[in-house]
Length: 137
Image (cartoon, rainbow, N blue to C red):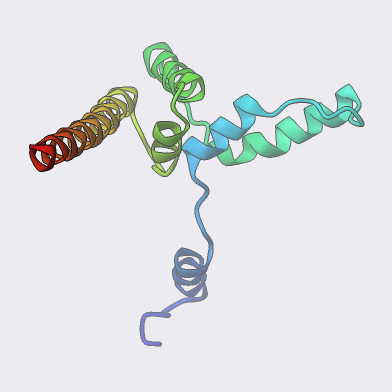
């Protein structure tokens, strides 16, 4: 309680403890992928988008920063692998470069796991055939 020297410091400490900060990456994904519902008027759809945009944590940015953010968002939204997209959306902050690096690492891991699984299956099939032919001799 001694940390609460003033009302403002108490409010700040409580907000840091209790108020969950929005995930900017996920908020931008929701904004970019939200579609108008059949029962929604264009005005209602725009209101939905405006509400969703509040969690996007937009800041003043240079043209280059803004371009990288747009490319990062399009990159995440356009990925063909839902599992890689999901892993990237778990990040609360993520640069374009980091998104590409993580996606490449996850892609390699998926391919290596698949190759490992295929290799193990082929080895088991080979062992089974060898054991079968040995028992027939």
